[in-house]
Length: 301
Image (cartoon, rainbow, N blue to C red):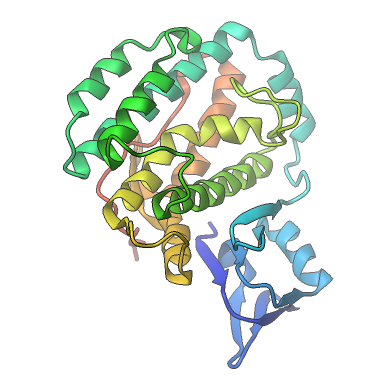
């Protein structure tokens, strides 16, 4: 499985050289395409050839473009590379509303549970309260526990005066980390034959990634915990090192039902389990991450 996240923050020219990405800078670097999951173009003076884009489609690589503030504003995804995408589309369209609502409730419960763990790991108060919110989630989150828990959670993690709309470093870091995570999930959905625009709960006609915005929820606390632990209130903008660190969170470990694995691997497993939910009609088959202390994944020899 691909595992590398390539972040390019200096002027460069990207070319395909057989089975590798050639990054031409002061010193050229070659990275095998089969090792790459994510490429982030983080500088205005980066050029690339058409064969590089073709290789991204061939190897299932997500390639992010950034705007004038160097925040992700676009993502190149493989084009329906899964051999059974039409079958999966039919399954998504046939998904019953009760099953969709129960599956969404399972996602919300794990999101809130992970938010509670984030508070505990950050040394903040409120973990027990978050656990009580988990118990109050009903089908389709009819009791609106997700928004109730979020208001409580962010005030405990970042302080009572914190607002997500503020132009401050923590929000810049959260937005950047979420964007990378969302793109990685969209990549996984396409690779498994899903149509990302068809969500369980999110249903905006103007959103091409509704399903990614469903699946991302229990993964968000990975970003939250890192930002809370590394916040710098004296800064407003992210440094290149900040951005590289946020991208590297795709390779920290989380706990899954089959053991500890990287966020990237957990995304794959969660998406595979969602396919089983659609096939067998039970939300109990959904496998979601459990937040643990942030440590980079160490591959077994």
